Image 1 (cartoon, one colour):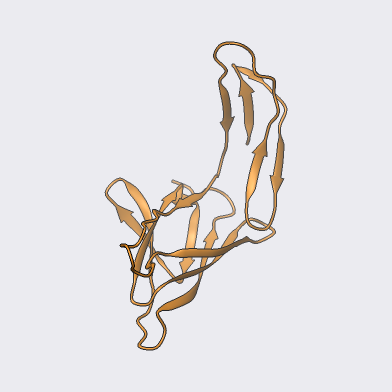
Image 2 (spheres, helix red, strand yellow):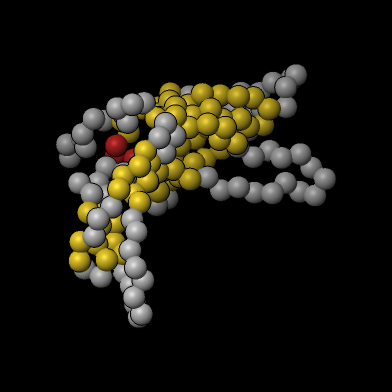
Length: 144
């Protein structure tokens, strides 16, 4: 269920989605003083990565998310990623209880948050490697 209110009063909204993302769109006038917009979502999933600049003069070794594609039923997310061969990367996951299965990475826990670990295989010939990560979700929130 999705609810949107401004200063405690319901307001209209639109839900826009495409193959790679989805958004709640609201339009409202700003009144003088404090304005509080609340968007309540259910079964929302997110992931984030920390980017670091390479040392001066060095090549980047960071993970690149090249594409994200959702299935039409929104029960599978496919990501194409690229990273330094032999590299290990961590993505933080929000609402990991929605995940049913992961391919191409490992999910787990780390002090205070859920994580997704991506390990790029070593290579003697290529400095960067592309991988596909597939995350499958429960159709409904799992019991428990």
